[in-house]
Length: 308
Image (cartoon, rainbow, N blue to C red; front, side, top):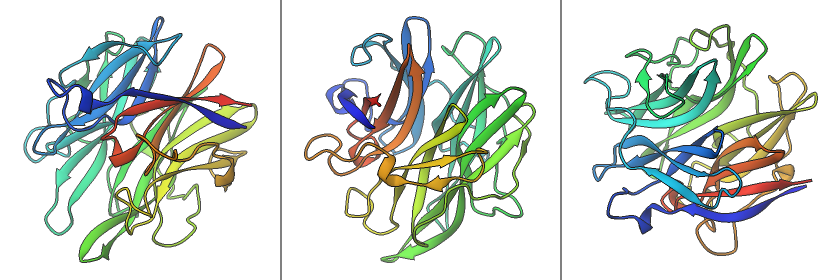
């Protein structure tokens, strides 16, 4: 069982007349004729903003539309998203589309802090409005660092989320680096979240950090893909992101089995030093993964097809 790589879909470096520096953290909405991929680009001052592109549903290698402007303005000064907005998950809720996103603030003692916001679309995911000026997931008494990048699904009447929770900031080579893990949350409405402070996937070592969990239920089994890295030399170096995998019967406690991830860096090219931020969707009987390669999305977005 493996992922068959189908290549790079979009490289922002080939569209310098309008694109910025990144096409980071893809989040996917499957529509009637197209697959809509929300992603984070960056302005020259490094502030992230969210926009999207559409690819052909039958052939995701073909981009049919570029949305060349931000979906949301930055938050008001002092709010959680006044310095950056990055997509996490897109969920259809009746006639509405929920976009969970990561909001960023610059830090002083550490480089940044971030939290989870919610924006809602009434027109099928073409435009969005903030649900609130504040976050729907924020650091709290038991999680004092961050709560961000949730993967959210609706399962009957229960909303379930797997999100990134900070453990600490670790000083590495004179610079503070974040260490974070995947935790579990649930909700009755997708807004007010119960967070029992349960770590879903165990670390291999205390300097390991995870990002972008993606959970797909296959039969009675919950399958999670995610990316993991070291806290040392992880910017396209020896500790950079790789894909991981874990399984669970209850969707809360996962058994790690990274050897089953089915995908790794290539020998050369756009995803040769890093592979990260998976988003997996089922489209017309095929399981598709959209993901980033080198430079945390500097080389853009690619996709792969699951082969049993």
